[in-house]
Length: 283
Image (cartoon, rainbow, N blue to C red; front, side, top):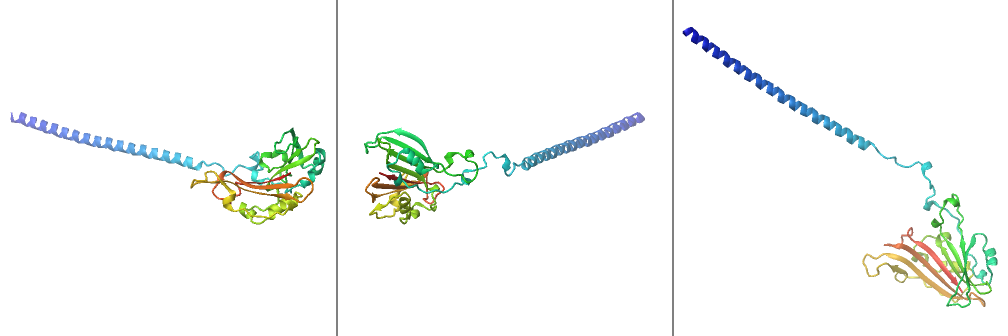
């Protein structure tokens, strides 16, 4: 009996040892599985990080070219690069009492008769017809066919004719860019009488007893919202007028100088925005 009892105790000890060993193996196995899972997760995250870095690097390195080659630009003549010959105001008083053919001959090929219309003028019953002559600037760079006329400064003569077809009234409009005048602000340009004298002299006008008064800022400016703190200057303008030393028409003259700033400007020195014109009426 003792021998059998001892065998049972030895068998139980072996079972306990075997179970203990199995548990230890299971713990080791579970530990290895956990370590493997963590390692696989780390590798996955590292691979994802590399992928994102590679994607970001690709986005950063793809850059557009700094400039388009000149040979790929269709319109190589930008508005600010157009150069045209300067001109001067024609002898307008010398056109009075001439017919259209005589006027065209006197003006030359630079001016073209573009329109004639029958009209009625309530202020002058003698006016029966209106003829319009337009000046085409001489382009110094590029081909005239490649440049839109909308980009060019204009010069126009509106001539009123009587029933005999003779000129008895002229309204002349010119963009100052065509004339060889300095680019100055409105007040600086008209600080002295030189511009008015030059316009009248070139147009053939000999003013009678004319006294010059230079314009002041407040009286010359037109605002978009006069009473607003954020008002902008829409235009600056001044009108000079007088009589002419002559016994025949024209007998009076009116000169208007205008700086038109379009949608408005905060400073009158913004000359790039200004369209500067002179209007001279002779009657």
